[in-house]
Image (tube, rainbow over all chains, first blue to last red):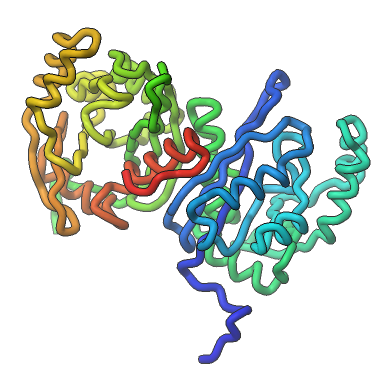
Length: 198
Length: 198
């Protein structure tokens, strides 16, 4: 069977899944973990970096870490657990895509309450800049995986292809394994004992 | 077919695999990572703790972390990458077994050069205590996995059963996945980008 190259998802593709660690009111920095998966169930590598809590350097630090890792030439997709890391450090997925040439998929298990979210941003530093990044991320799309609704924001990739990647990586639950495991690692390193789920 | 319960290794058993992070001459503490695997290829949880470089608290801190994790009642085996962590912080596998009631498997990919090792211990604090722990760990046993020799020290488990656990966990290489992945995580967290292998 002939499959168009750009629609194909190889089972051995490398995917980077990024999540942040839990943090307290006192913390100024938040540890972020990026697990590098080969296909659905093989861990190939790991990156880590810090960002400012409620700051504005998540995008920059993701791009920096991506460009630094020895796996950069193999990485085909970037997944992030939600559009923010470390509180309100919002991710510019369009910028990440343009700087890394790698499609970026934001995965959310709940539909974000945008009004409440934008109101909370008002209380942070740089609220206008943050709001612009949220707008830039584009529309929230819904799909179902393993019987559950999940919500997505996409840069450099369409919904059809994203579904194939979710099918490949959601092998143990409705959470892609690169995100599920980055959550376990980030919480286990920060707290000494991991939390389940992502 | 009837299999005696104590010889059986279920494919869903939980295994804790411990490795340390790389460290520099300046470091006084060394981060250790314990990945909790369910069977051969599912990461269920993660513990982390620090030990003193060349110190004497690896055994105590492994036991403490084991007793603290929410996974403790499911954990069936403990694997450690070598008999030492953080330089010459030597692990008392008999004590770990007796305090946790969980068999402990030390995995080494090279046959340790005992003379050289014991000579190096002389230069650390508490050399006599350290040497006693090394002696207590018992004889080094050799087996083959995926075509390569590996060396083992065992507490609370025999070679026959250990081989079954190695067969279950060495799915991607000659290194059990709980150790391979703990190495990737420990180096990725410490250095920002992981090293391959364990």
